[in-house]
Image 1 (cartoon, rainbow, N blue to C red):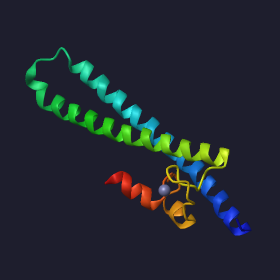
Image 2: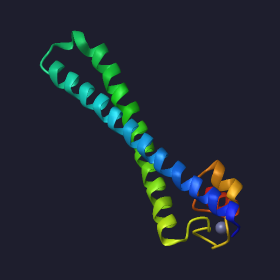
Image 3: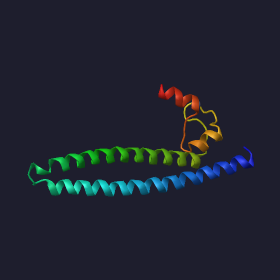
Image 4: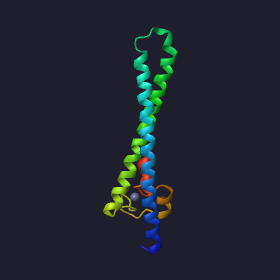
Length: 124
Ligand SMILES: [Zn+2]
């Protein structure tokens, strides 16, 4: 590995930790929103059916936010996995076939754990 490769890797590690902090902040914000919506629903619990329309959209919002939350949690898991791989020195090699993942790919997708071939095979 050349010096500039090492620098690119450390820039990637930096990006991963920034990304993690950002994603965790989004998740916290989202959980606040879900909490507020759930609270609304509870408040409306005893109210007659005139509120049905409102409740319907709240339920929809909660489902949408929960999907978003799952995405964010998934992203956090992937970032943490990448950081773990940096720590144990396996970052940048494919978790499936062990080939080196090109830095260009990692720079496009810092938390990638598979090379393009294995990723494609997994998605088929
Ligand atoms: Zn591979």
